[in-house]
Image 1 (cartoon, protein in one colour):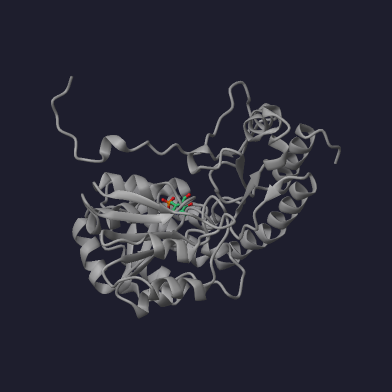
Image 2: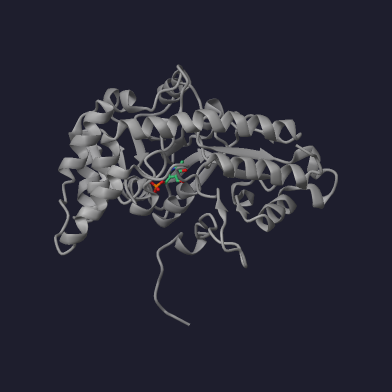
Length: 369
Ligand SMILES: Cc1ncc(COP(=O)(O)O)c(C=O)c1O
């Protein structure tokens, strides 16, 4: 047995399991398991990535100057407050490393994104959850769960995997109830998909307060999950801290180039949003019509729960539905790891993929639609 000492907390981590992408024996699959973009990346991003192939011997710009300027312009933000990372996962992990350690608590809501407890434990801190109400972040439950040891509070808004969100006013109420030494991290990975007037991504709160951070990603609406590109919008003091701990070249040159092109292709992004605006409600309504319970998601995915169906026996629950979908070559995400064993998460894909998933689930439930 090895005598190497591992830092506290690390062996308690259940490694993150990503969405599956293959079904044994199937040549072609429909992959709806990782909330990837239905339309893929912008052709401009693919071209910018390809152009970099001739210069792979060059180190990237460690400052991500052009990318930060492009993000700042696209979202009307201050480039100096933007810190880029290899996916927003990396920003989440830097925040835990910088602001939480042994004896500290990292708070998040019951069905929050699994990278929060993983990154907290990797930093030696203790993850703590607060209950949700109707599969939605409960601000008062979070405030009640804050202790003297709380250092970071993560909220995905909208949340993955529930798809639900809290309005701007509730987020402000939450911040107002937090001590100044607790960092509020608003993870807005799906912000570009949200079309509600009372929603805010959190950028204005970052500019107004020293203890609020927003994280964003290129993996969702911009379709660049394979590039690993994300960013944080942070107060100046937090930017200074993150720049000290990040690798000097933590974002690859092709990722930076693809990101600049993606964020500049606003016509393509609008097409992706319009596609989601059509097929998210269509799929939600079809599945509700089959008697399934589906949250009011504002992201690019649906949480589908089998509730009453599952009461008819194990053959009618989420596990059996998942196996049935797989036999049809359709891969969705099981939710047991999120404390929702009765539910599946289904990403909004192309039109034929949505029709296929509805057809398959309707056959599973023995209905003809
Ligand atoms: C809520 C949330 N935050 C962060 C991420 C991580 O994204 P990235 O690919 O930028 O690391 C995801 C990815 O699924 C997510 O759902």
